[in-house]
Image 1: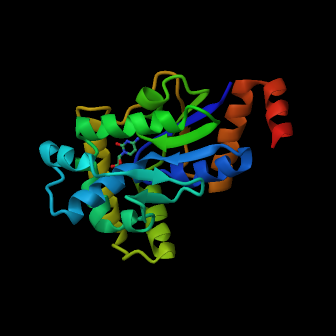
Image 2: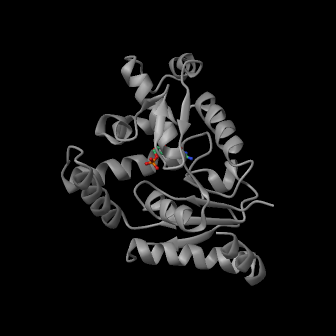
Length: 231
Ligand code: DC
């Protein structure tokens, strides 16, 4: 039997940083689903398409091959676009491209396929509600807009991505929260059986510890010991 951890939550709530560390520690496969939606968005932008138009989104899906490696790097048609998809032009358009039913169906199928054969930790917006409905543990991670904007600001700075002002980042986060939560297809929503974790005042280490603790509690001591021994 394989285990799965689903982490959902709004933009910049620290999901992927925590998920990557947990994946390393427990030797789970990490899947960054946001990066996949970003890769579709990038392809649309490169082709000069309108990200709000679902017909135009559908037109590129055939030629859009997305792959993630075990280090969480993302490839679009075999091109490494890991840093590129974090840039501002993609961030500001991804909420539109990811809202189309055709895009979601394609990527959800890919994500479910990746989770089939091994222990996995996946983060996104619809993991607990759609992609991994039977996840061993579902976490819904939240944090104040201020805390999220500060994190994104420092993160972009560290990655050498063109830095917007804190106010601009806040506005972008609020706009994306609104679009992600109000879209028709798989809106950002807490699954009824998800555990809410507020990370506003937590460090990444604390966040990781909380999630691992919840997971350990969920599977029980015997299974936990077996898992730890197999690492
Ligand atoms: O987590 P992120 O900021 O990289 O996500 C980018 C966009 O993709 C965000 O606007 C929401 C969307 N997304 C989604 O709709 N479903 C997911 N499972 C993951 C991300």
